[in-house]
Amino acid sequence: MKYTFTYQTTAYDLWQLSMYGAYGSMVGVCNIIFTVAMLLLSTRFWGDVNIFIKILLIIAVCLFTVIQPLVIYMRAKRQAATISHHMEIGFDDNGIHVKIGNQNSNLKWHMIKGVSKKPSMIIIVLAAKHGFVLTNKVLGKQKEAFYNYVVSKI
Image 1 (cartoon, rainbow, N blue to C red):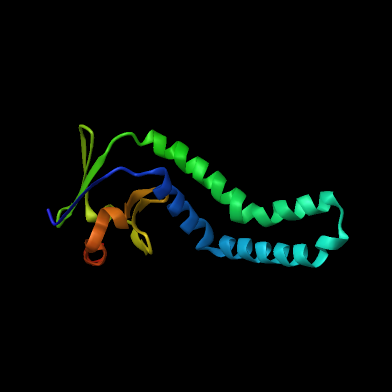
Image 2: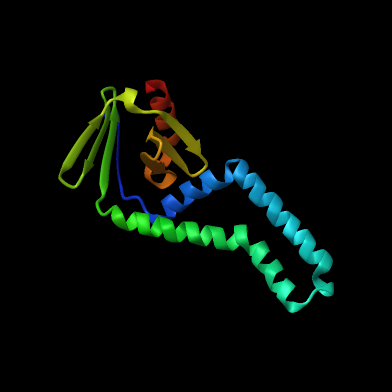
């Protein structure tokens, strides 16, 4: 095999993937604009409003900076709990070979819909909600070579 990796997807990996999805789109831009606007409103009117409005302003500032990431992490933690086995995944000219526990699966390259390189991971997409997340920790120094190999195959 050209590349073989053994790993287990963690809640942190899934959280990072979700955060890239949330903040790498137009929704993320709206979240940032909302947060900046709420910070500006909070600093401008802090001394003039009652305690109830101050609490609402604090919640509004924390909505996309604290609350949303925590909720996403809790969802990722639940999702990671359903992935119980270490996965061995191999890539060669014939396709992708996945071994989870006693189950083996072989996927041909034409089944891959896309590949995305993020600062801390490479995402191989099979379908809308299915794919593989290979983090920098798993890939090590092979990240660039591996990414170029996968791109050349799809």
